[in-house]
Length: 261
Image (cartoon, rainbow, N blue to C red; front, side, top):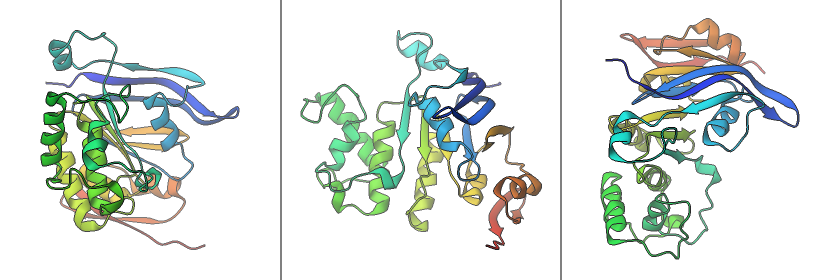
């Protein structure tokens, strides 16, 4: 059975200061999709993500959100609303901010609540289950400044998923994370993907091709691939360097490039 669309982007253009970064972008994200967004620096990956999150208004075109059928049965929300979780780049987090793991995760329940707000027993139980799922038991009261990179990434992922979103967007989740935790992160994402769609924005082409179900290649406009079958020619053209894909079975495992500057 074909999955239903939850995000539809039609003829979208967007940019800054009167200058278009993206133009004529069309994309459909489906329920339980695992979409990888790749492309060169400055190609528009972040701009597209900001448009989907509502942080940037497109200069043309539209983005239509559909609540998944299962969510419609659970709640009486508006037809066009969609719950989105967001995992920001690791480098955007102020680790000196005095907030605990539990508080970080609880902050994902409502943008209208402050840290001083009282959370219900039910909400704290939700946080407890997420903490266990993220493998953070025993660290609930620990300040984020005392966490390892992998622990902080899991706390932020817990914040993104505690509200049971229909889509989770991850911005460069592998940045500054060691390879051991990276494997654990993608195990968590594969588990989450059974419940929601995931959009993964990354420059790490090799890792992305191993994990996702479909690919959007963004370089001012967008090329959509319903699987991970991207040609070497496209990558070389858009990343401006020779790239070799090493395959294992039908799936590329590494991307190696020769760079001459």
